[in-house]
Each structure stands twice: as C-alpha cells, then as structure tokens.
Image (cartoon, rainbow, N blue to C red; front, top):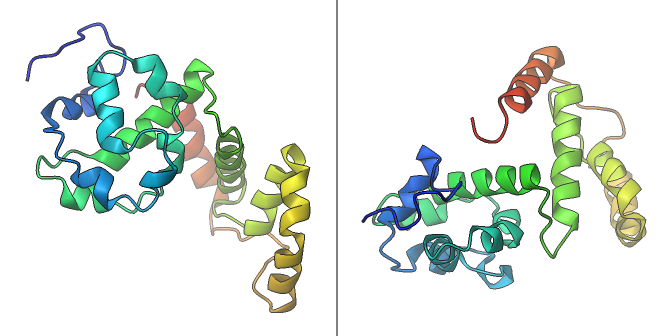
Length: 182
C-alpha cells in the first residue's frame, strides 16, 4: 500500500510503517482483552492513523490500555508488531505532551519507570506510593487490599533491588537520552 500521508510523524518512523500492511481484518481487536475499554480498538486506531488523524491517535487511551499480552501479534495475518507500535505511540504521546482522557495511566507508567530506574526492579509498594502522591483517592481506595497483602506477606515495603541497579539506571538513562524516536 502506498504511503497516504508522507509527512505524518508516526509513519515516518520505520517501526510504525508496518500499519500500512494492515488489511483491517480485526484479528488484533478481537483478541485484545481490553479492547472494549479503548477509545479505538487497534484496528480502528490504525485506520485513524492511516486516515491522517495522528493527533486523535495520540490523544486516544488505546496505547495506555495495552497490556502487552501479544495476542494481537500472534493472531495478525500480516505479522504487524501491534504491541510495539503501542509502545511507540505512548512514547510519542508523552513527547508531544498529549494526555489521554484517562489521565492516570501515564502517571502510573512514570512511577514504574522511576522505580525500575532506581532499584533495577519494581517494588509494588514503592510504585503505588509514588503514584498515590498524584492520586491520593486511589491510595485510599486500595488501602484495604494493601493491608491484606501486607498481612499475608505478599507486599514488600523494602525495595527489591537487582544485583546491579546502576546498570539498569544507566540503560534507562541511555533510552531517555535517545528519545522517543530512537
């Protein structure tokens, strides 16, 4: 298929050009466990981008709901890397300052990345504490569950550290330096 929008910043990235092979079969959308929660299921999101509404795609909640289960990629007859494209859209949305209508997910991702960058691994209590600073209502709503997990020994209060958290921090810093278009 020809490139319908040669100046589209999304399609300018080689990884993202795969959507031009999309035949709109809907296998990705039909296999997505959270498709019903999305503004646009993956098939519809790709159609939106191909129709030239890149801004609408960036404002969509679709990439933020992607849980990277890779069912879409397993079922795609064109072998389009749907989950990878969702990651790229998240990076581009953050770089463009776009916030989806569900504004909490970017804050959660940021808390996750900060914890992994600091410790080399994720500690649930630390991620939720950092996230809860911006969303105290969610902290209150989850406090009963957190106390139950703590009582059963299923919630660590101390950080889970990798053997060399500095290595992960350096890798994270390199990725940030490369930016979303790398």
